[in-house]
Image 1 (cartoon, rainbow, N blue to C red):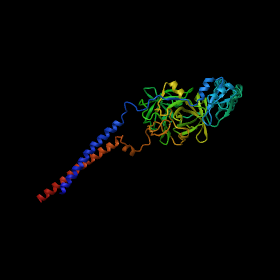
Image 2: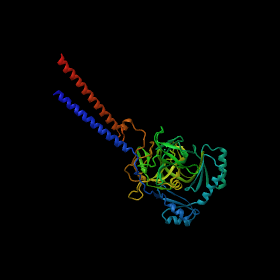
Image 3: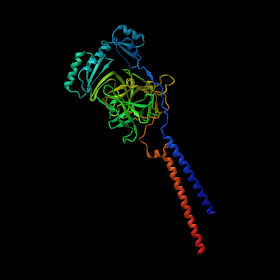
Image 4: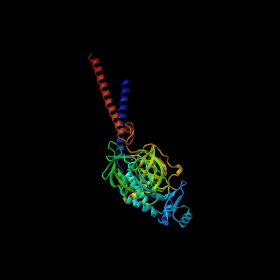
Length: 464
């Protein structure tokens, strides 16, 4: 009876071990297939919406730059148009916008900035047209000497009283040190928006992050390669393209990360409006918000002059360069540089997305439009600022365009236990195979030992 029970146990153990070998082999095969690069990507390839962020822009275009001096949104989000005469004011009022009579037209303001551009360049200076005060504001950081400041002041005085001089704290610098951090020998930046030329996919990021040929990784051990810079424009502009190593951005390419495992789906592109509330995400300081304070800004960085930038009061720090700026699911810009930090506040400039895409011949990869046409969250439901660092190559979640959605980052921060138990990893299958082999060997060894023991007991009794 005892021998019969032993035989049953051995048979069951052998069957379980053989079954384990078969199961482990199947698990390894499935994991290997799961890690293969799919032939096609599930990334949306819908046409991005072109969104008008300020209806007053159409009035400015209609009336012309000799009769207007810019447009902005007031504290309640209503369009205001600066005009130089009563007839234009009446036209603006009939169109449902608020007119504001000013002394200087856009032509005069642009003439002032042209004079500033033609003057000797002084690193650490910047200027922008302030539509709301009808002035050109010239800023100089702490690195500008007294003699350079005096020279700038004289140039401003020669232009007219509508050029205002301001000293600003800190230094105007590019913000390289990106939401996911991307790293190379040039430093650390933030990934901006995913774009495509219809054949390959790219990351749109800041131009100062690295020259053509720069190789980017998502980890600081240079094992997980993201891609390589294939086109750069800096200075003058501040944008570049990083081509994905695989050629495709993959699932979730329409999402930008905002920290805490969340992201915002992008549905289109637009031009920023003065007074507009905007959000910026970066790998150093996470999600921050603020307001657009000026357009067509020029900044004289130590590395060179960049023009046509968006000025904001959103803070940023080194490493946030290239990160996305957006509002209600609309892509507006990528982080260029600025002054200050996220403790004391500061000024940050952005490369407009629309201008970069036009010059590069690229299209933004966006989410499919929602049922209401434009999609996006209302201002009251917009994502709130977070101090958490953010990641950027993201998996899609279930959310409407412009709203927040759960996201996951690429690589890094995964424990050994998590990797071994991941069904898409070959580890679990190998463990099952290894355990089954051990069981088979153990079963054979135990049976052999039992047979030898029985053999000795039998012949000992026979020969005794």
